[in-house]
Length: 184
Image 1 (cartoon, one colour):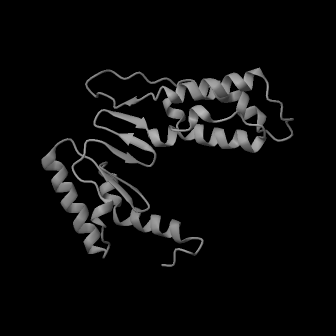
Image 2 (cartoon, helix red, strand yellow):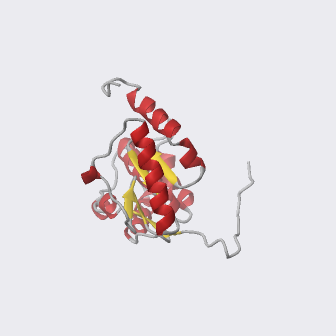
């Protein structure tokens, strides 16, 4: 497969999804292109899953570069997230310049910031409500006027990102509360 071709990444992703589909269906394997994450609740289970994964890759003539692999770790950065046994956080490397991000002066600048912010939206409570003034600026036919509401939204999001909130892994022994907005 030639990776200079337009559909090569999609083809490779489909291939990886296909060969590891049963592992993903069992709920212990995540795959994005050539990044594979497996997780387990104990070491014995993990060793067995790792053995199965490595055998599957070998059967498909796929090989790993050991220097690019991490084994038996309690924390891993995967697709912009820091994953630990009980929490998921934002990658501090990705957040490094957030406090210095200047206020956008164009619609393109707003889209750049909201594109970044949207990736981490699940970490910010009431994200849509906070970011609404910024998204309103990107609507077709809207004149770009950076007012107090936009500045407040921008600064609030930057502040919330700098606090580096964590998502807690649910405890299945505790009750769950599910809230949904049924409007529209």
